[in-house]
Length: 30
Length: 562
Image 1: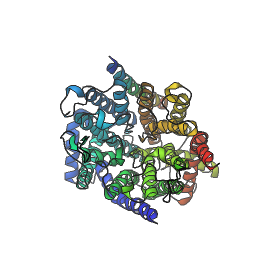
Image 2: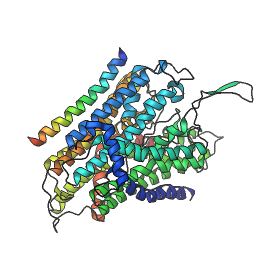
Image 3: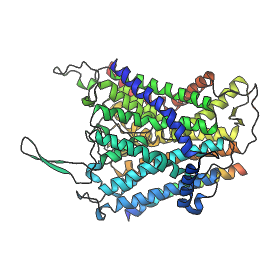
Image 4: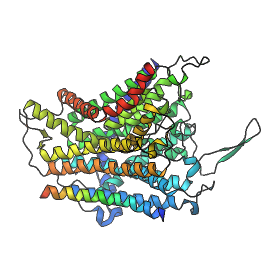
């Protein structure tokens, strides 16, 4: 169970970084 | 004299080697329409491997998302291998399961090209984890850095598409890192580094006791550890271990490998953007700052350590010899030299105990990690320098009343905001993490030294994590859940934020109309700009990190002096 939590923590960090990328792209085209 | 000769041979010799390698890296990463049929056939093979994903040209957003998705899959696969190592093969010594927060920290560390290690490989990791989790990540994380620099450079030439990340990462891995690692691993094995899948050896000592001697596929691991600015050791003591770095010659080879590809990355960048004189100016700035750090480390390490002060039996005649491997020759040449090289390039392997360096000598590796652009990591060092260049261009343009332009495109408010964010992110992760752990039991309870030195240990750990360096000051009991989670997150976030923001800047510049070069254009390829760039880097670094340095190594230095 703990393994899964730490795995999700890492993947959540990648998801946040992808969100940052998309937000930066939108701010450029706005 | 020995030290100057050693520095000249290692740094000067590698600088010379970096020129042809930069040429080769351009051929590998950006062959262009004039490439021969064999080179084009290689790219077609890479496109076939990547399938549909490998055929689409990617603008900055798609290139970045592809890089993040690929790295997330790297994280997932390597995590699974390590979490299951106790039931998987290639574990002749029965290493058992790894604690979950340590798996998170280790995989975050190797995915982000950091290689901060809160474990000892010979105690905790099976051969399968060492090879298929850690060594595989050492290849693909370094290849990610080279790919990102190639994409950034293409964006700066005005192409709206930066290339294809999935093809770029294969180019870097198969045509650059793999052949180079094979050659270096062979030389390391010839130099005495073990290369075997047999389990630990049992030996009987002269006193008749049994001794277990850890070994394994070390030569392969060490080669990519150094070439890919990874730095993670097969054994806990890293390159101070006689099996990772047996002789003076393997020590010299290791130091050359630490800086070779980061140096060549600058030339590759220059060739892709078609501005070799600009690349030479940037190379000169990086070289100057690197030599300044080496000189500082060597000079301050020439004084005897205060740790032995008052011990009547100890007479120190060769500088600070504590924590040095005497088999590498000149004690304050190889230790501080390696320390400056490994922290200027985000490598992080260690050839001496950094905790034992004299206070101001220990500050030099920290400065290397704080600036993180004096050659820096494979590919990403030049990406970090690009951020400083954008800031320097803007400030210099404002100062002399010229239009801030970089490679014929105007640098405006958006680019400056993104560059400022990239610089602030590094300072935030280092200083906020250090402040939090310096006042809570998470950090205080793990210290083995008090006062300024204890503060330096916490500061160094977060600097190493945020700069994706991975070296340890040590003296810290850092295999705890708070340390594993905090540094794991810092490594992941500050690996990719300083990649995303420069790619966004390049994307933004690529959308602008090219301006014609005129008498009013600020030159980025002369000595004046070089001086401006050095000043920008030093002022930003000092404003961000000097207060923390004053509380740690500088305070400790004055305590010793008094």
